[in-house]
Amino acid sequence: MKIAIVGLGAASFGTFLALEKYCEKISCLDIFTKKEKISDEKKIYSIDEIVNFYKKLNYSKPIPPKINIQTKASDTSEIFKENYEAMDLWGSSCLPLSKEDLAYNRFEFDEYTESYRDIAKAIRISGCENDLIEEFLGDTYINEEEITLDEKLENLLKKFDKSINKNNIILGKARLALSHNKKSNNAESERIKCECSLNNCNIHTLFLSNDIERYIQDSRLKNNIIYEKVEYIDFENKKLTYNSIKKKQYDVIFICAGPKETMGLLNRSLKIKNFQISDSQSYILPMFSFKKNLRNAKDNSFSLTSLIGVLRQDHSKNEKEFIQIYKISDELWYQALPKMFWPLSKILSRFIYACVIYLDDKYKINYIINYKNNNVVYKKIEPNSKSKIKKFVRKIRLLLGDNFKVFKIFLFKKKTSHHFGNLKVDDIPLKTFAHKYEKKGIYFCGSATFTKLPSISPTFTIMADSNILAKKAILDFK
Ligand SMILES: Cc1cc2nc3c(=O)[nH]c(=O)nc-3n(C[C@H](O)[C@H](O)[C@H](O)COP(=O)(O)OP(=O)(O)OC[C@H]3O[C@@H](n4cnc5c(N)ncnc54)[C@H](O)[C@@H]3O)c2cc1C
Image (tube, rainbow, N blue to C red; front, side):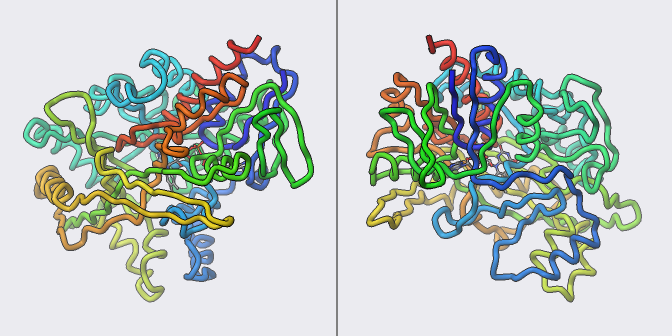
């Protein structure tokens, strides 16, 4: 059987893990990506290199905030204004969706559970098995020790545990996808506790798209990664055209190109002009700590998502709003501050933290898109979330108690979030539109097929969803 995967991101990883089980059935597997080949060495930058990097920056360009963990990706901005390459960095927060939210997706809850588990055999997921988040989500697939928290956040977590019922928000340590700097990257091998928590750590790094690529390269399933953009898909004859001239025919094609690029492929290949795409709304709320901890501060605690929280309503398991609490790293301060203030970055990191709030599906932003003479014209429809966010900030203030202060005047909207989904093709949800092509052996993967955008990080579910689809597709193939 000849198979093609378009894309080398989260959805393709889920697909690939399913295909690995059927090695003997697959005679040829081509994976297409627009990215350049990764270098063999996974480099972790020293602080001097980071400073030099920021010194050289041209500030009119988007700046990669996570340079310390090496990525080429820029952060998201307005979806059509910035030419960012899909999601080179898929981040680290690795959470399953709740049962209620999974009910909006195309497969059964048990199928998701099994696929989450299969993925957790390939990725190491760190987190705390004893906190309330674990209890809330039921099973978070943790197979790695938790990371070390900043002391102030650790204290907040302890204090918060006691006030849980009053606030209706559940707070816990982040679930991070990690990769070991050891020969065996098999998640089932030994767990490692890492005191330095990833910042320039010699043992761990975050599991990013480079690791997906490496996993695929090391697999026993013979495959060929083609570093080319797929221009057209011939949906009748299952042919892919890339590099303008080359065409190749397949038995099965998985489209794992991310929602925006899936839309582009449908426009170029089937001349479809009208689409809708959605994204969750998010806000950033700085958190100020006025307590001194200059003497005991640990500079090397983790600086990306450190704590996560969900707001539940009526004690049901269905999550509503999701928060990520960050310690702000030096590198982020270099990005935000004029150079003369850089020496203050270490001090500022001990007093100012960030809370990112993701609102639930009801407040999602819809983009109505029309292709006119090769140009994309779009209208953004954004539900008014002012009173919602006001209430939520009040809840957060309660949550933080006297550990941190938050001020509404510092609250600002993130230009857009990163959970693009709910792709509609001529007003038809992609998961319905896809049926016709699935019968022919062409499958659409990833969040574009999700009709509900819950606030929780979506990538683990994007992987699981494509994993289930690929298992079914191969079994269907006679
Ligand atoms: C800064 C940042 C932080 C994030 N943090 C988190 C987080 O902590 N947790 C979380 O759950 N999510 C996070 N996300 C969201 C996450 O990145 C996406 O939800 C996820 O990557 C989507 O997966 P995907 O497979 O659908 O698309 P992608 O992972 O974007 O993969 C698409 C792939 O298709 C390829 N491609 C596209 N078009 C073509 C074409 N025509 N031909 C060939 N190849 C093509 C691309 O090169 C890419 O390899 C973050 C995103 C950003 C930007």
